[in-house]
Image (tube, rainbow, N blue to C red; front, side, top):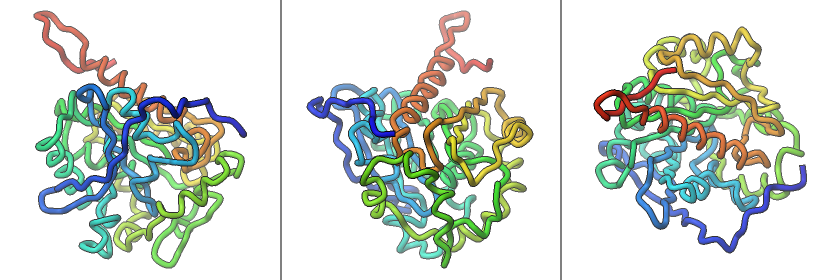
Length: 307
């Protein structure tokens, strides 16, 4: 692929700023973009995968590829956080945190951000790979309250498609082709620009990877908000055959589940040519979640709809 939908760089593009969020005493670093001329309709919280940082969602390879600027242009605040054990918190947690501990911290980060910022209709989590595990765990912990609108997860299933020893971790870089897929999926310069985003996978995070298939059912059963899963054309970490997908979706505590496939993409969708397409689809799912919230019931009140 050699072209991307043209984006007019002369438009007043929202600014991306560094931010620090207090999560009940734990300081998480990250990036934030806000609508320039309106209060946010909601907050999109972007959660990166293993071995990456928050900038995964702010690709600079081509205009239009950043989820942060796109979301802000469409009227949302977009908050991309470095997960516990990455960025600012890496010094405090040199071995990282396990999934349950990260969920407690992420839940506190959402509460802390809401204390200091307008959040509109609430939070919508866009998560990649390991970040999807954290998004599901945070939703299970936070419950179906009205401030959590839904989850959009890419690069995550239940059953691994390969031996977990091939995953990145301490002393292991992981297998390049499984992370990226075909070179044609990425614009020139994408790999050079992604180098500052790469970070070591913390020991505690890596050590529990093998247990995800058995841990998923207990987490999924407590997720009651809408969920959308996306698998790249060359997703090579996760099984995505029909029995695997049926298992993945049936275990969730919500009946609003969508599974999509993203053509022309490898595992790291948000760093490739398909980034803008995927981000638009994720934000469209957010719009669907908001629309469901606005379903009018007798008396003029609103309630969340379950289709």
